[in-house]
Length: 137
Length: 392
Image (cartoon, rainbow over all chains, first blue to last red; front, side, top):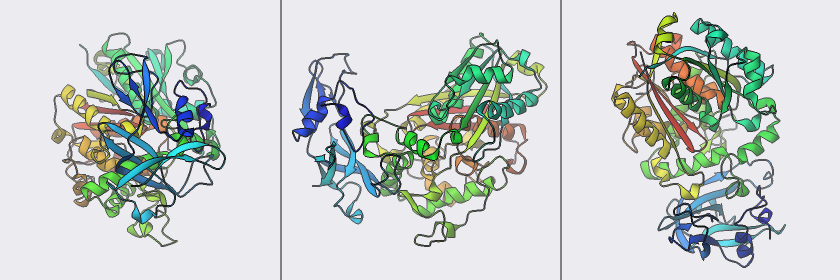
């Protein structure tokens, strides 16, 4: 599957990490890890920036973390006009791994707090686009 | 090694919808800076043009603009670090002069944001950060800074009234700056939640409101640098570059260390610049900081050491960054009131500090004949950061 399937609207068609989208289709949210030095990356990288290895493998991201910060967008860029308001945030899993995504639309805005426990899960839009989202733990 | 001075500064008014092309826009700031320096094109050895390229229809603008300004056949090229492009251009010009390669270099920052339609502009803003992994979620600049604001406010007790305080200060000076796009007075009532008449209260990317965000504008700025020998031969009072610091940070929010701490590039660039200049933050008499959003000014205070971490709000509450305060900041209205024509912004900040150090800032002049000034210019969401220190 091509990377144009990623997110609400993708701006990238070709990447060596396009397998990420196939894994999403299988219900997995994965980062990459270097087989030589053990470095872990999310978002995934095709190349190890630490030891220059190209010998990378996939690993499943932790499910649970804390919401480090968030924002609710009341305006949207071109191509996303139908979506606002929507909330986006950063999850900190510890051990140097974080993730940026939208929050589950069913969470009420007043329930969202910095440092709240959250989990991540794959998401399929009605038009077939694949993403992941942050929801309550 | 020879020192490097600013010998000429110029800036257009920042406006909505400049009535001319980018070459004409560039000419207006260039003309003012050349007349300020009292030199002609034959005195200039090289030129550097700075903007964010996605707004220009013209590909490779440096050659086109250099021709229009009469700066051919001297070497010319283009430099880009988004919103900090022209302070990066000044750093490159400094290096070329310091190395002995050139004696006099023109740095021209420009942006005609109205060159493209507002729908096109919105799309480009959505692509302003990590287009592979973040833009597919519908990101935009205010949302990114709102991530910092949310974490910072939760940890340090910064309030919406504090953020409003930054904008109220900005508007005080925007009203007296004839180069600013936003000159209307702003009052606390403009931020009142739920009041349909309160034009600055509406949420853009919560917790940031309309009044927390700077506006797009068209404009250009020009800074002329020279080595000591040339600077002393020109008639104007030279202003010397004492220190330069620059840093970069991961583009993706998932790789950012600590949102409650603010932008790491602000801290990194400041530390380098202070070290090179051999001064401390308390020695700075007047500063320009990158207030693309109100939260950015509070974070800048701390990165620059004007306040301890988490205490930036005290400077606004105590009016310490007003013109009469302990450390005047953005007393030309900042990006919030001047507007933010991306490539021109750094040069505009530098022009303000040069005028302050020369005692030529008019109604914005800080008293006490300031001898050291600082410019803090950020590119993207803290993707790039430049801090430059100037002295008389």
